[in-house]
Image (cartoon, rainbow, N blue to C red; front, top):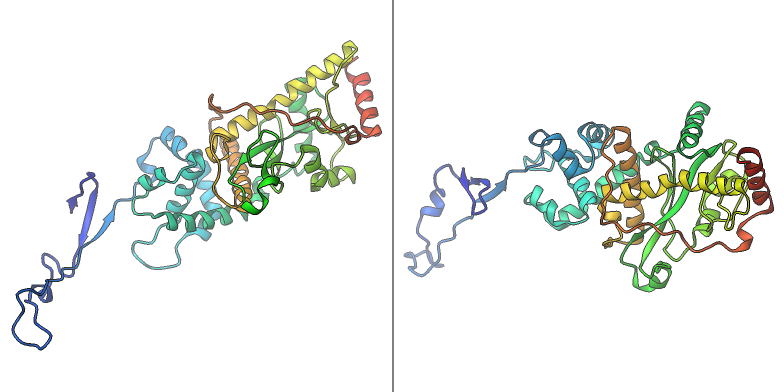
Length: 375
């Protein structure tokens, strides 16, 4: 055991303990087998270096675990119980990376959006190695994404969602809040223009539905940044489920950019009565959970923050978004802190919807709601 220049412990492995071996100690001979040549170099095998892997959770405080990996111990353990079988090495090599080591490296990357800190945690992991590990871990978590991101499964669970929304802002029968957020990326050259959004940077426009407790119930990351929020909703399976009455009675809350539907309540542009003002106030107060969700989500997983951009193909960026949604819900389940980075840019509502986005039935349903609950 020796100490390297950076102070870390290293092991030196040689051909024989305490020496370079008999062959290395013999003088070299020339090509004809005669006397040794005084100019022939002596080839000495360099010792292999193995650095200590500082990834074990037992060595960290609870606060440090959350700071590094964005999940607390219980959430990490549940996640590893789900994906560990897919991550454990299939080789018997002594120095193969354990599954937990791979998982923590990817969690660190998602939380910090840079490769360099990962190399400091897992010394000896090259960038190509980390890229392979990232793909492996992302695919393992995606297999369980529907288990972690979903709408309530029972009438009792839906009733709990309605009650929590009503206690939050006084809006009855609310099933969720919907909006889109932009995730910056480096666009492919051949389709650069379709990824440029109305804020003038390249992104995916990601549709999210959440409950009042900031749990993500639905996420759609299949559309480039140039797509309007209302267009994304119309093209999504969520629209078909509501249109075909496969969802419970109630409505989503969306900003004015969506347009009103019988199952989608939007605010009035110019409220004229006290009841309409109360409706708008309840609508705004209830939808504040979405702004908080985006702040917590992007603070927890900085790879989603618009202060930088993901240097991956759009399909891989979409996968990372889904994975971060699943991990966010796991963090919520286990009570991880929900802090918001004050340096994050505030979310802006998208452009206004065209008139045809609002249906007659939607406008009528909104008027009935105002008359029955806000007069």
